[in-house]
Image 1 (cartoon, rainbow, N blue to C red):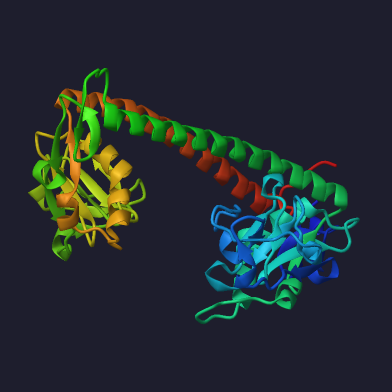
Image 2 (image 1 turned 60 degrees about the vertical axis):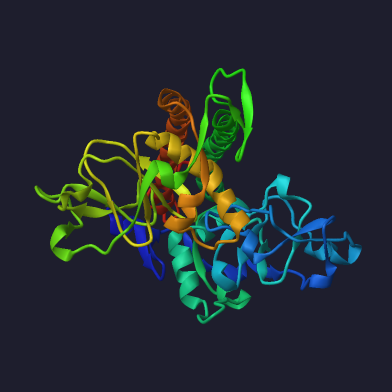
Length: 407
C-alpha cells in the first residue's frame, strides 16, 4: 500500500486517512480569568496566575506572583491540576503551561486563558496539551497575534486554529509516550535543582571557610581563615573590555590561521562567536563576566581567547587561580551589583570589589571541588537536552501520524 493510499493531504499537512482535522472551537472553549485589581493584592492569600508567571520553557513560576484573599466569588477562577493555560498578551503571548498539584490553590488572572474541553469523549486533555505546545501550532498561533507594544491574541483566534484528531485510544497512547519522556525530563530537573543547591552550599562554605582551617579572623569581607589575604579584584587581575573585531582578522569558522576563540555576551558553551587570527591573547587564561549581569566563566585551555562587545575579560595574575576567581564572581558579584544599584557592571566597578586570596594551592583545591559539581551539572544538562531532542522528534512524528502507535 502506498503512502498516498494510507495518508491524505489536509490544510495542516499529510495525516493518516482515518484521522480528522478539527477546529479547536468545536471541542473546547478558551475561558479567561478575573480582572483582579491591585488594591486586592496582599502578602498572604491565594496566588494569582498572571501572564508573566508562564515561562518560555512552559513551566509555571509562582515565586513572584501576587496573592489575593480567598473569596467564594472567585471560585469560578480557581484552576485545577492538569489545566492547560496560555498567555494571551504582552511579551509572553503564546506561552503555554500546565497546572501541577503543587501550584494549587491558584486563581486565573485576566489575559490568561484556560483550555476548557467541552467534548472529553473525543478530545483527550493530555493529547491536546502536546498539540498546543508543538512548535508548528505555536507558529500558526503567533501569526494571528496582533503586534505592537503589547502583542495579544483573542480567544476566537485560538479557537479557530486546527489540530489533527485520531481516535481517543490513539490520542491516549500518543500522550502516554510523550508523557513518559516528560517524566524523565522532570526527574533530571529535580537532580539539577538538588545539585545546584549542593553547589550553593559548597560555595558558601569553601569561599568563606576554606579547607581544614581552625583559626579565623574578621576582615572587610567577613570572617575568613587567618592565613587568607584580602585584595581588590583589580589588584589580582588585568581587566579588559571586549573590542570591535577587525574584519580581516575574524572568521565565523575555524581555519588554519583563525584559531583563537572569540566569545560574545552569552558566555557559555553557546557563547562562541567565532575565531580570530590576532595573537594578542595567545597562551593566556581568562575569566569572562557576561551572560547577564555578573555571570562568570573561566577558560583555561591551551591557546588564546578574545571577546567582543560589552564582555568584561579578567586576565588573572599569578596571585589568583582562574577557576577560583570565577567561582567567587559567580557567588558574590551579583550581590555587589544589586547592593550598589548599578544596572550593569563596568570594569572600574569590578576592579574595586574585594575578594579573598587564599594560598594558590588552596585556591586550586577549592576550584577542583566546585568544578566536580559543575561537571555533574553539565552531564545532567546534556542528558536533559538529549531527552528534549528525543521529545521534539517524537512530537513531530507522532502528532501528524507519520509514526503510528498500536492501540
